[in-house]
Structures are given as C-alpha cells and as structure tokens.
Amino acid sequence: MCDYSIEMYGSRPAREGERYQTTRFPSGTIGLTAPGHPETAVCLACDTALTVDGIHDDLRRAFGLRATEDAVFMRLDTGSYRDGVRFGNGAEVSLQRFAPGAGVTVRHLLENARPIDIEQLQSHYVGA
Image (cartoon, rainbow, N blue to C red):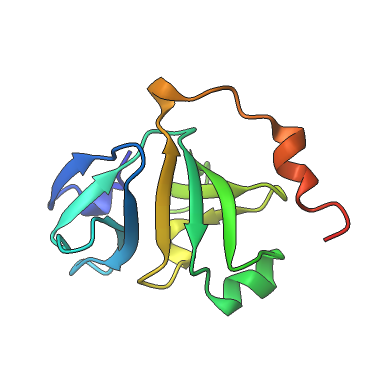
C-alpha cells in the first residue's frame, strides 16, 4: 500500500530483507524509498513485519518507543494519510510522523509471513 499522495511517483513493491528509509517526496508526503532511489516509492502490504530503526527522539517520547523497534505495517482508519505502523506496545503511528531518514527493514512479507505472536511482541514492553 502506498498513500494516495505518492501515487504520482514511480513505485515498486517491497522485498523481503531489504532496508528502506523514510523520505519526504516533493508533494510533502513521507514515504519509503530504497537508498539511492529517492524518486521511487516502495509500497508495503498491510501486516508486513518490519524492524524500524532511527526512530526520532520526539516519537520515542510521545509513544514510549526505543530507537529500534519491531512493528507491523498497517492501514490507519482515520486521517488524510493511511500508511502507518503498529508497534508492540500498541502504538499506531502514521508514517507522516517519522522524520526523513528513519530505517525500515522488511522482516517478512505478507505472503511469506508466519503468524505474528502478539504476546511475544508485547513482552518486550513488560518491565521496560
């Protein structure tokens, strides 16, 4: 899925194991691109398992996150922009809240994904 606001740019699907970065497109929208290809949006399917790194301090404080977190790509139900991630602590964050340059690594694409163990993902937050 790619937000409608980046549909005017070239795009391609994400690949398992690849690392992407958040990028501000000329439209002002934050999306994902492969390093070295800032003009091509990378689109993810909902429920794709991710590792997000380089999470900016403001987001870390606002949502109780660490600099690197496992997450799941999702479609947000509200707002103008629908691309987002759900972290293990339940925080759902629009991609638009990320600063350019945050890293996103695809751990498992939807078609290759094992069922996500929510309890295991949430266990990272017990006592943290």
